Amino acid sequence: MLHVYNTLSKQKEPFEPANPPFVGMYVCGPTVYDDPHLGHAKSYVSFDVIVRFLRALKYKVRYVQNITDVGHLLEDSEDGEDRIIKKAKLEKVEPIEIAQKYERHYFHDMDLLNNLRPDISCRASGYIPEMIELVKTLLDKGYAYENEGNVYFDIAKFEGYGKLSGRKIEDLLEGVRDTVAEGKRHSADFALWKKADPQHIMQWLSPWGRGYPGWHLECSVMSMKYLGESIDIHGGGLDNQFPHHECEIAQSEAATGKPFVKYWLHNNMVTINGQKMSKSLGNFKALPDLFETYGSMVIRFFILQGHYRSPQDFSDQALDAAKAGFTRLSKIVQDIRSRIGETVQNLEDSELSEPWKGYKQKFYEYMEDDFNTAGAVSVLFDMAKESQARLQSSPEKTDLECADKLFHALGESILGLAFKSENAVSGTGTAESELVEFLLELRQDFRAKKDWAASDAIRDRLGDMGILVEDGKDGASWRKA
RNA sequence: GGCGGCGUAGCCAAGUGGCUAAGGCAGAGGUCUGCAAAACCUUUAUUCAGCGGUUCAAAUCCGCUCGCCGCCUCCA
Image (cartoon, rainbow, N blue to C red; front, side):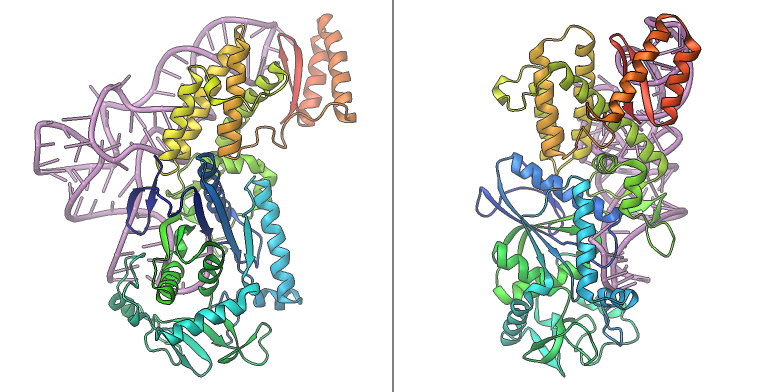
């Protein structure tokens, strides 16, 4: 039985979707104004594994994720500028060009991390009419008020405000910044619709004049459109718990009168060498750079060695360790596959023998306990050890087939690891592999003559080129470092 | 200032009332090998930031202290 930690109740609860086997899941997507970074990787890898595991449990998941390409305000700034517009001015292009460029970068990097695409990826800019409808409803029901082209949500009217983040309206008054936006009744009232200056580049016609939507609106509108008024799972970063998710709850529940989300799941944040990752500290890690250094699968593997609700610290030492561990795992899986020739990943569960059956069960127990991927990964290493022992003796073919099946079902399908990564052996038949094979044949002749100097020279030169040569019982093998 | 979280071996990291405190990396010793690499075996926390308390029993619950982090303004 799957248990998940619900931020709303602050405890683990049995997972019971409203209409099994269907599960509606919404995860806050990125604001596309810059390259994706390590924080995105942790968040979206975490939710990707959650989706994959729910599907392994036979749930029919509809996974919706937004792309914020409008409305993400630098709140209350005088010019009402948003981050995308700021960047567009900087690069002297249309805001939508910025949004689409970084949306492509986002998906490119998520693909490299082996994250499944959401079933529905929706851009906020495509749902302005629906947002206006929601604002109208809130005005009609008395939860919102208009003031000179701006519409605000009246948090005092919504009883449950603060139930997710544990905040009280009275406390919110204390931390008030010096300037309360013009026309707000309460400093914590949030914008549903903002008036736009004539020169503002992104604006739409609304019943309240020309303007643009408040940031929180998009998630309520798009999740309700595709998943219904009450959704099973809403995920996102812990940093969005307040105010973003709190505001989503307020506006959604005020509008529908129904509970908005059954299970709120929040992933924790990333630190770099123990420090917050931020541009101002100069320790900001963009994904393309990290992929260059470590490979995208190592980043994914490292993330999975932690828990999604724990903060995770990145350092070169930790990533090097993850790389070494993942390489070992990949190598064993590749060895198994080359030994049995053809993979038999469609082996039925009932055909699993011991101890393989036990590994699968243990893996599932970890995952069913609030997606404990760190524990699940440890099972992969148990399997690796077991497999290695068998490979070295004379293995039963069925054991290797069981191992192969499990590495595929658990490691690849559920955890989303790709054991034949970009670091794997080059394909046969390429000029490169032909050359390496030829050099190794020459080297074998030198070795037969015990000409160790020549033999080692070949190995060293290949090593310099990033090709590792390893001598085994059946001759030398090679792979890229 | 308000709210919340964390502190487990050299590093990363599970475990959150009771078997010998997972796993990975690094280290040490050994097997194998022309050497190297890889792999395998053995080994590495009487102890879970510190101090007090509750309990037959706590890394796990409570209190205090120290350190770190997040949110309260945009952030995954």
